[in-house]
Image (cartoon, rainbow, N blue to C red; front, side):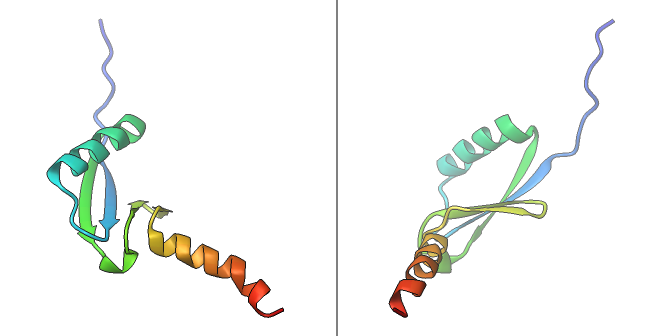
Length: 84
């Protein structure tokens, strides 16, 4: 007798991008994420303030790959030098 894994609920992933993602981009992203997380449900949203790039949010964890975030990091790195 072969045991099957019990079905698990899909993981909800919110993907925010500066511009709408194409169906092909969403399919590629879903494929990559499902390899790591198993069954997923993507919720795409548009946030122009991100400038470019995207953020991925799974439950309470966010991976920020946006240009806005990188610019903020750069600003914090340069701020101490600007006061000298």
